[in-house]
Amino acid sequence: MRNDVKAYYGETLQHSSDLQTNACCTGESPPEHLKPILAAIHDEVHARYYGCGLIAPEQIQGMRILDLGSGAGRDCYALSALVGEQGAVIGVDMTEQQLAVARKHLDYHRQQFGYAQSNVTFLQGELEHLERLDIPDNSIDIIVSNCVINLCEDKAAVLKHAYRLLKPGGEMYFSDVYADRRMPATLAKDPVLFGECLSGAFYWNDFHNTAKACGFLDPRLVKDAPITIENTELQAKCGNIRFFSATYRLFKLDALEPFCEDYGQAVIYKGSIEHQPHSFTLDKHHHIETGKVFPVCGNTWRMLHDTRFKDHFTFIGNWDNHYGIFEGCGTALPYDTDTAASSAGACC
Image (cartoon, rainbow, N blue to C red; front, side, top):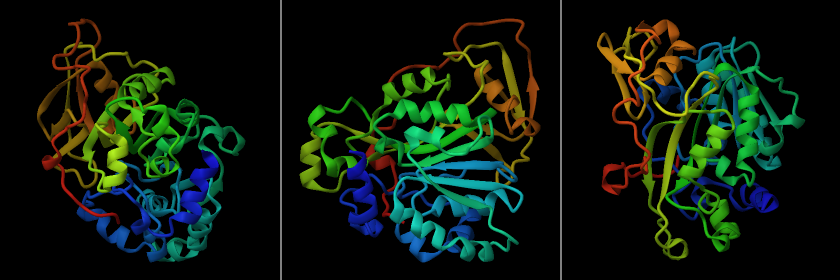
């Protein structure tokens, strides 16, 4: 299957319009501050972009970022503008043709962003075997990935490597395709469905359990949208399986608990994160308005206090009293199933 994926993304797909479904597409409109950055990226890089989400974590100036499955480099180059000349971006991909496009435009983007030297590096490697690359443990601030982990057969290995490479308090912020059930063996072996990011999709609850087993004890869903397979033949193969694109945050914080426990704590957002003066969205259930006391569970408190976000919040409470599970925490399907609620759009 690995060779099939390399051939699909290296030879079969030459442009985003070659995709047979909309799974590897995002209709999400970028925020205003990202539009000029995306406009500065080379057309050839844009043309070979296959992503199911918008990978733009907050507060990343000067950070060291690793992009897993960087492809032709669109996300790497956008992030290189956001981290600044003192930051660094490393892209890893296994497909020679994609890497050739990415490396071809290193100097172009250096000039576009006004840097004396490029802050982007591209490495060839398999995501299940990141130990073969010269990336030290505990050296990465943020790991991103965009619609690629579903293409990996050993997904647990990818998450284990991500945890190992992140600094304490670091974050994996990534988008991918998920399913509401496990894939039948016949679909899992279909090369087109696999290449289209469908038959390799994680069953969402298996993902949550795998992430926890790899050290990411409290996966946080940031946003999601249902995927409509706009290909009648492939839709018929998939039957009643529902697919979703979803963006998650996974924090490397050893003290996180398996569930959201209530210690009577709260935070106040100062409004000081760039481009987010009025509110900060940690995840789908934590939209924190500036200046307002916002009750949080112990895990959320740590995600804000023990990470790069600490200076942007005032923290209330301690760990003296425990009040049980934080109200509203559940274990049902976390995604919205109403296709009308999601915005339609084409590939970039």
